[in-house]
Length: 327
Image (cartoon, rainbow, N blue to C red; front, side, top):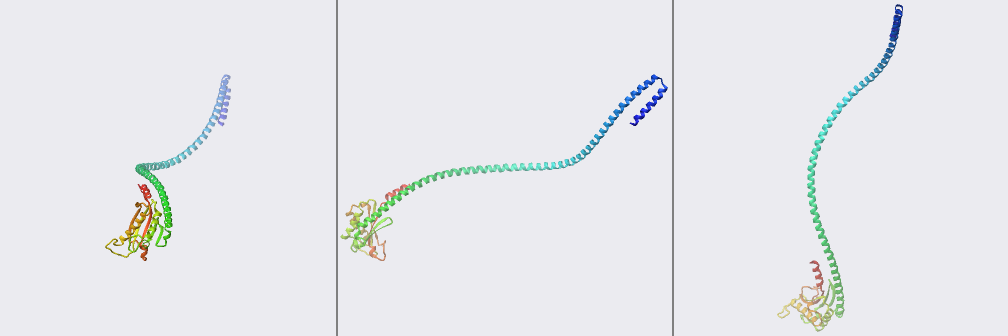
């Protein structure tokens, strides 16, 4: 601003000198030039101000830019350090990744091997299970068949039990019938009892025979006849007539020669009396001798000398049922 004022004063001084020394025309030219210079000066002054303002703005922007550059430089340093750290970490990650890939590959190969083995084991197990299922199916079929057989046998057993119960009831009733028929002789060397599903009629030898004889006394024939009539018509019985002796040994040249002969002869004599005086089927009756070998009282020989008539239910139908059930 000071330079501009001095410039103006110099111009005015020159113009004053020129005015005093030059003609009017020249003065006018000089005035116009001075005016032109003044306008030019004003324009330049304004441009100078504008440039100064622009320069200040640029300086301000430069300072801001300088600070940004410094900041960027600092950030670049930090970023460089960070980048180096990141690169190291990246290298470590790459190494770990390579190691992981190697382990994964190894694991995959091992897994494939284990998988193949497992599949083989599973296939073998499947075959075994199928075989066991077949065996189980066969066993189940066999069990079902056995169950059917057991049910059939249970039905058969129920029928057999019912049959045995009927026979037991029948033999109990027979025991009463025989006892009623022989009431007058019970307690006189004769007894009737029911045991083990059989009726036993035991008659001491003194009631039937003379000593050492196999001939039935006339009075004893009445007892045997009553017994035979009590059981005649019963085709569901088996009749065993057993002769028993005591232990007194004897030996003869004539018949009976010993206790065996005597026991058999006495049993046969009783059978003959029974068949002669009843309608008993001979097929149902058996005569047997037991000699001295089945005593009822070793201390009382008289009790051992006896005839036993053993009435047994005919079990042929029961045996047929059992045989049919086991075929």
